[in-house]
Amino acid sequence: MQSLGHSAQRGRKHIVEEKQKNEANLKENEGYIAQNTALMKQQKADLDAKAEAEKAADKERKEKQIAAENVLKGWDTRKEKEAAAVAGNKAIGEDSTQLDQLTDDESS
Image (cartoon, rainbow, N blue to C red; front, side, top):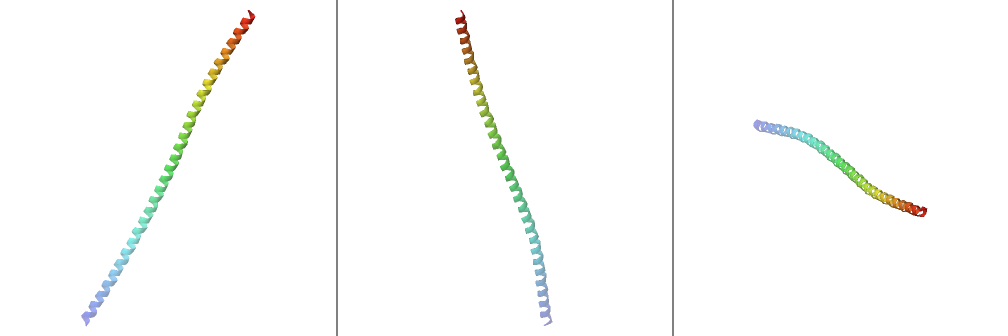
């Protein structure tokens, strides 16, 4: 009888030890879960920041490309204007030369 009571007591002690061990493991696992959750949140924040930086860089590149294209268009326009001005000056010069010739002819 006494050995039966002693065996039951050891069984309860074993159950209590297992319960304590399981609770300790559970707390340890909860700590790991909290660490992993914090790490994942940080990684997500880092990825979001990287994506935002890439988006801003893409926008800046597009703006620079548009500005460069506009400058090139301006150069084309400027060249066209210069060519027109040169042609105009030549025409004016030719007209004035012809006018000079006419006035010279009339004078003679």
